[in-house]
Length: 319
Image (cartoon, rainbow, N blue to C red; front, side, top):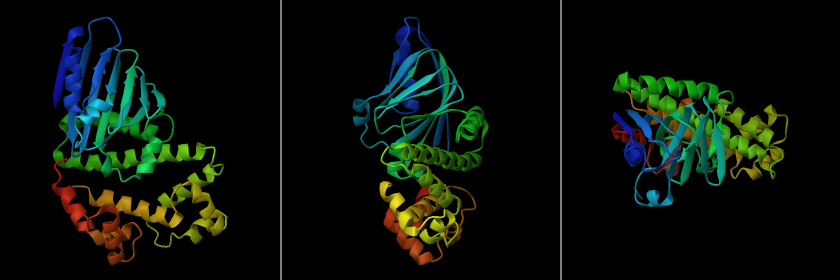
């Protein structure tokens, strides 16, 4: 646990250092002329770092220079859960505001800044980007966005992360490991929600609402080995040819999307640490792969290692 309390404007840099050591290197600029006061409290649950920040109005920036100073640091995805005050996130040319109860999503591998115009309290959750199992394209669509506490994943994710932040200090390590997997699943769902929403809003994709429905249908039925383009088209009362035309704007074919989402689900499940890890064949079957040998070849092609090696590396990974 890291705790720092400062009550002097000249020591705002000390609070910045505490945040940098706890999360990722950042710069903090106070936004008032009064003495600066801030608090940082942080805990680790498996591979998830969950922190609570409370401070006076400030701008928190992660610059390109700070990123360049640590070229080998692992990219993290961050979720900010606003408890009090406002947060205004800027990343990749996007600007998003979160009110109390809302969420913002950002990527630590690229520059960003968050303005907190008044005294604020926020929970920040950081986890390795590689463990989300989401396509890079989806993540780029999703970052720099805000979600209210009433829409999409907001009513589920925000309260869950708030409770987790409050109780993290008292959770045994095995429980924390399991909860880290739940955090990864929920953040993955948030990325998918934001990415699909932006895909639907693109002017070059007038059928975005139908694409979103198809994607949701696929995600709900990944365990069905008969999830084919023919079955998907029939369920949506369209031809297979029209289904393929819909995905011309998505940068992936329907069959490839199904395989990709299945592999991501398998990678997440095989990557969870626990006393009773599932077998590779059981995970493959649960997510729609009928042939174990085909699954192993496909997994290795996507991740560079076999499913067993992936599972072993995640089990040995300290977080």
